[in-house]
Amino acid sequence: MQPINFNDQLQVLDNLELILSNDCYNQNLFKTADEIRQKYHGDGVHLRGLIEFSNYCNRSCYYCGLRKENKNPERYRLSQKEIISAALTAEELGYGTVVLQSGEDNHFTLEIIAEIVKEIKEKTDLAITLSLGERTKEEYQEWRQAGADRYLLRFETSDPQLYEKLHPVGNFQNRIDNLYWLKESGYQLGSGSLIGLPDQSVQNLADDLRLYKKLDLDMVGLGPFLMNPNTPLAGEDNGSFELTLKMLALTRIILPKAHLPATTALGTVDSKGREKALQKGANVMMPNVTPREYRANYQLYPDKICTDENPVDCSHCIPARLKTIDRFPATGPGHSLK
Ligand code: SAM
Ligand code: SF4
Ligand code: FES
Image (cartoon, rainbow, N blue to C red; front, side, top):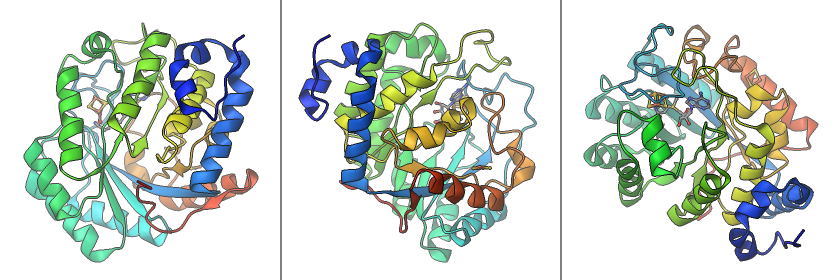
């Protein structure tokens, strides 16, 4: 097999399909990704407290348990007071960032989100990441002015045909336009994709990596597709854990400064999945700070971890897990290195 120098970013970018389809490179790939993570980010792991504040959603993404057609989850919205209280908890637990995430829920208007962002900024030193799906350019600008620092919006797949097959609402070009609007509005931008979607090819995955690079992302979230039986993708195979780790390691090599979370989906398919990700390029974890009574209904896929726990449980669990791999919680907001 052709030798590859994994420290040579251009060589890696030129050979993505080859690396993705041959496991003989894994050892060198994973080792180099871990070294690059160490060099740029050190051994501290940034903790972002995740508040899943509404599971109402206007969209119908084929893979997701929150899609509007799914009658299974009991729908909930946290009140403004509950959201602020969860943010205060995140700060008390020592996290530097709070991530406000929801389905696409227009109940939370421009004004309501702006008020929540302002109040969190007034009462805490937390950095704020929003992850509310596609909204308007005006909303992105107003929330940025209110104090939001970052926005997460995965493009899910870089293949326009596959994107449109899985998303009856919205289209690929619109997704990309939204990502550029966010960039123009001054957010630190996070995106990413699902690995192992039905009909996704190695070429598609290589194109995902090239798109992360083209967008020059500050954060990249990627996780395996996990089949939810209450969706149109019922019966499809889950995405591969190993392949997701390869995508993560390649992302670390092509975007050394990016923040890369060890995602909940990786922790769901393998009990040590997040630790393994942290040893192959990841430098971020997202402990859940949603009050326990709501968690089971934010069920994107079956068996999601941390649904029986409360915020304090996760805050004890994560440092203990980090210790087993000689890592530790980082301090400060963990802004983009760029
Ligand atoms: N509604 C917002 C959005 O779509 O950007 C934020 C919340 S959405 C639940 C967050 C992410 O969950 C999506 O970007 C998607 O990649 C992921 N997700 C949804 N269903 C999934 C599944 N079955 N397996 C793995 N990840 C999934
Ligand atoms: Fe809604 Fe996001 Fe799920 Fe799509 S991925 S159905 S937008 S919550
Ligand atoms: Fe939630 Fe381990 S991180 S229980």
